[in-house]
Length: 257
Length: 260
Image 1 (cartoon, rainbow over the protein chains, first blue to last red):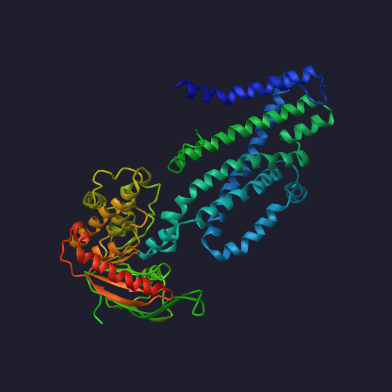
Image 2 (tube, each protein chain N blue to C red):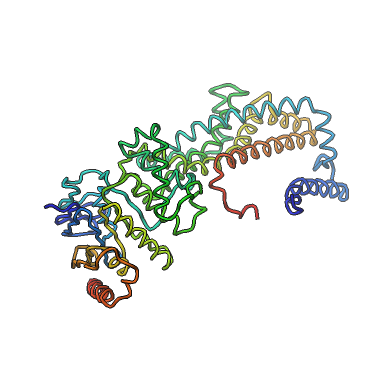
């Protein structure tokens, strides 16, 4: 490993540490009250102190998020393929989906609660609802951008639509699909936490609501930290999956440069 | 009518019969084993001709016949190559070549059993265009000329009776282009295949073809037909002779007139 490689490896840790140090120093230097913005050291102490609750609720949120995300992947992929399959379905469904996506999900949570009660189920559904749109759009885009010449080559061989889909459409869509997972997973966390904040007795969202009610500002920030860590880990997992599955599409040295 | 590929009074419009006419009253016949070139000003419907002859589009007037049969669906005896190599980046060069065999019958149902045989065939074909041993590389690891050779191989792997080439050398540099002329010349000679080459390069047309059709500007029809009598096999040197230049010049006159 060269020096340059090593510095790139260490960069994320270094930047994070610098952020926290600057934060700590600034809070102390300007005498910012802890109920306004607690310093990282105080947040760290809150994490330590409330660790069992944070751990349990983090897992709860993670489960709700992952389940919603899995639903979004399955249905998003299916719907994306359907929309990409036929111009008619595309024309019919697309406006509906855009309209649906424009609805703030926070406004949908009460309806979900009305239907399913509070707790786990609305969190899963909100995570699903918020994260499936980018998957559909990306899969449909991948299918819509098949080169017409390539389609001609295959059609002239007598390929059916299903053949073209299997041999070209789906493999070609995979980079779009896996790229969309990175966006979708972080959105899924937003969804589950929104729902937990409004209507749940569990989860990080609920924990932060309670901390807020008791004015325990360091604990609110501790909850945010837990979410950030979960988000980073899951994003990283999706990025790894993307590289594994579609290495052929990532030849550019641009992002690495 | 005995021509292998025959278009008889064909008219085609995009956007229905009332839309823009791409070709009108187009008639031409290509004999079996013949190398035909179609030249014309840009936008003269050359690519439409390709699509009509392969059954990717259907005319609203006139008849298209391939191998004696009227065309009502994509003809399955054709191989196609275009200006862009359109290789699949997730497949190796060899796997790209195998793609047509995964689709065309009878290979499609035999590909599992005869995999080794097909791979050997693909490797032999690659070797015949100067790409021996490159099968394991991905398309993006090959130069533009090598990609285009691969694309030609893909058009030929299922041993089609008809090869349709739509400006396949247009995006290559002059030297690579001449190299590939020789590749396609040799493939044609070895396989006795019928070739229809659409191009705007008159030297290319005259060097390769037995017969050159000149098309008018849109809506396209054949305004001149020129038999090229240079003996085969032709060497690239022939392109520098006065006779060759005279033929190119003659065709050029037609196109200049067609553009007016």
